[in-house]
Length: 203
Image (cartoon, rainbow, N blue to C red; front, side):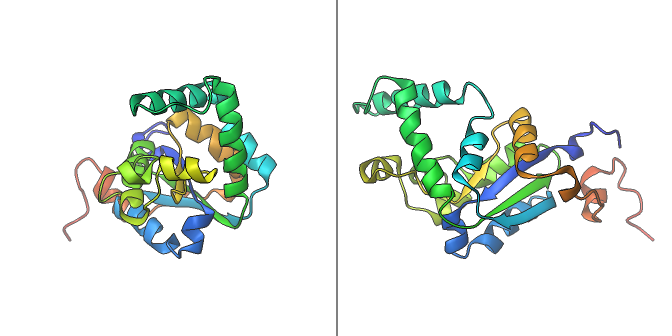
């Protein structure tokens, strides 16, 4: 297969401290494995607050875009946002995220396979657990909401981070993993998923 084949797409997944503490590591990995994706990198670490801030600000537009989306989310629900300044809102969000994600060990993983970014996002579910679909990781295992998190002055606890686009995934993977921490290897089921003619099934 060519180097740019769909099967080579990679995405970053981080099981957050609440996922580790709730002993959901195996369940979460099982969900992704079941789709046919291949795990090519994994490690446990306690990320520093600086590492988390760098992760979220890899995209220079993140602060502005996140603040604007948050304001719109409040307004769409008929609620008054805590501020009309996107950067002020994002500063609070980032402070909460740094506290949340550096509070204990996380599991950082790289998954590879066709459409891995979109597949992982679909399996993970929407950012807010309350409105995530039943059958998704967040929809099945979390009862948190933006409203409760805001009232408590903390980040929403939603178990998993998943890259939002291929470009974002490439940046995030480089932030969390060195190239020699990722393994290129073959698994048998890839022949069923990607072989055009399904050659070699019959003896």
